[in-house]
Image (cartoon, rainbow, N blue to C red; front, side):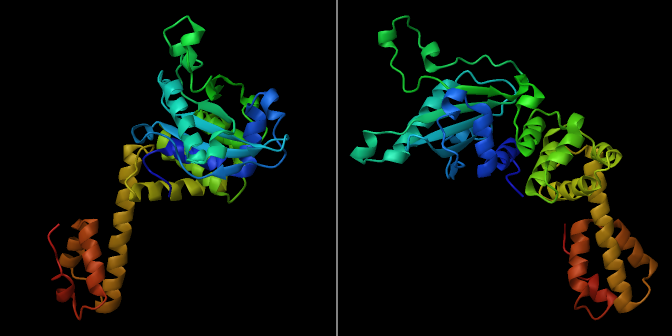
Length: 324
């Protein structure tokens, strides 16, 4: 299971870490004047992040290396802004990230420092609030004199997913489904999403996990919607994901009652397993033992399950109690 603390980052990377989908994203979202200069080969996904640690919970980034028809290369730096309202400091942050990319690329090699590759910055935003951030650092500098406005970066390309028509999100069906999910509109487009994500693919699980973790949706309601649409595989997958999230301490996105219900079901399952093992080894259980098992918490039941494997009798099993 991916990072539990940042579901936005998890889904964003799942969508664009595939070179084919990343290539489709560039063709869909770069201006024609730039997209027309790209060679047909899919981009190369480069390792590493350039985001400040303090902002890692609200931003995601991906660095792509693209071949140009001219025979040279360029970088495309995709920064996803996950805050519900845009951060006015973003152009300044973006400029610092671009400088880090150039520094990592060139190091101290003079030849590279004299011929830095272009970096095409793309900001992807899916928050509900209107985008009010300056278009470039130039707009943030308090001077009317262009001779005083020395800039490390001229601007960026904004792709505001919330402001776009659904059909303009992507020609790639899986990418479009992921962007719809980031817009928090997955419940309204469940059939299209189910049809767009390949059966058995990791992306199917990642999209559903995002819905469970981020959307304010009751698990049974989500299952019912999937069942009504005939998406039985996705309905079953919802339960599997919910149990895993609960085990790993991530109950956000599940109703509190659902989380308690899952926990109760897991505890009852362990108790029933213990009863079967005890009866198989020692015969019918006395009433006082039945009562102790019924009242015990999951940790104590785990102790008894461990003890029953080697204990010669019931008394030895229940002598294994540890304080909890």
